[in-house]
Length: 120
Image (cartoon, rainbow, N blue to C red):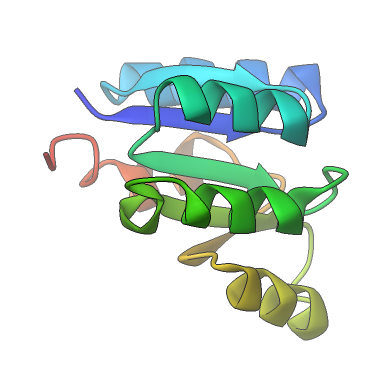
């Protein structure tokens, strides 16, 4: 089972994401802060990480994950509210693999992650 972490300051976003992604057969963990995400990733690195661009320290979090042993293999999705090219480029430079638009729903998460849940 693929491990996925949602790093987002919103309890509701994490709760909704967790419910949908658990149904897609991910083992989902949550972090409300970048620091909490780093600590959890140091203990057990997820296969996939969703990082909210509005999270304090989001870009540093991505860079830190990339520097951890095995961190280069983590698929990191940088979550943005709008297609802000400047913000997206900053996320890409920090090491984001791809982007995810917020607010996300079941349809978006299923289309992006359904194929990844079974990939080992």
